[in-house]
Length: 119
Image (tube, rainbow, N blue to C red; front, side, top):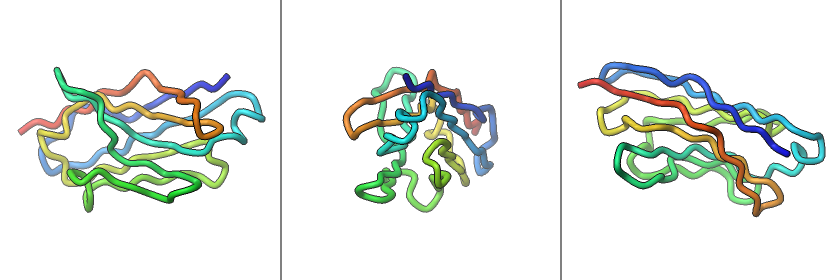
């Protein structure tokens, strides 16, 4: 079993910054099997979309709307992943979810953390 917990959301003004953190816990074999760690977001009444991902196989990828503003980073043990968000815009307002993938196929989601950017 793998547990995923996000933290760090909140309310910020346009142009401000926030840092989200995601911590993974579980059995040692499960933690050793992590292949991808990612952040997704879901604005009100919209679908959940990829924000950024770190993959053992493919490196780091960012969605176009956040390139140059957000930075994803993980620890060497692949047990934590952070998302540094700078120059925030109102359209970044969403619930942000952490995704941890094990063995390349099993997805484990956190419950999400709310980010609200005021104009």
